[in-house]
Image 1 (tube, rainbow, N blue to C red):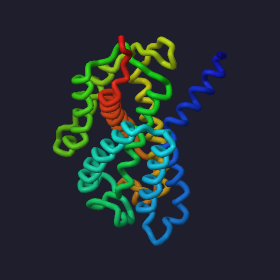
Image 2: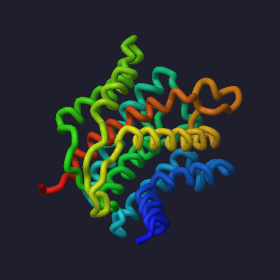
Image 3: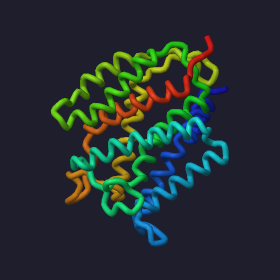
Image 4: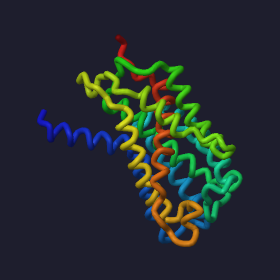
Length: 252
């Protein structure tokens, strides 16, 4: 298999793995012009469309039941954090509809769980099995620290740079089997690249008015680059939960 062919296969599988997130971005873009349908608010319509697509993925076998369960866990964690953040004025959802909790639309959880869906499906589609990996307790501790910092920073305890340093130290290149071939996977740079892509998607979603940061209420402007480290921390939590849930290790 040539290098070009392997690259095409890699990109195709990544497109499959990220199909849920890509679908959500498309929903945000196409709903920008007409703001909803069938008497529902735009955000309620987005939730219904995302939920139906999730059912479609399950029914067609593109997503497994255990992956869908993890998506549900991410959805719940995301809603908890979103409710806290919105109450503290970090961002706002204009026109939240009936399908919302404390002003936070249920659609929000899908935007986070799409990240977990992408990671879990990547393990499966690329047949990744780790031969070296940080221990589960260490990964879970990092994930909990990352999640907790989103809350603690509002009480004068912002430790994001310390946690980022720990994550980079722990997530050193690991040995794995990638598509049946032995490889070394540089986790920290890969998560940083993914965080940057999520930041770009976030710019698209705020541009279409799904939500706004305080700095965007007068006129839209690009999301601050400071959000990339925040997305990196979220990916640390996502990675920890996906590894613990799916156990992508080799039998050896």
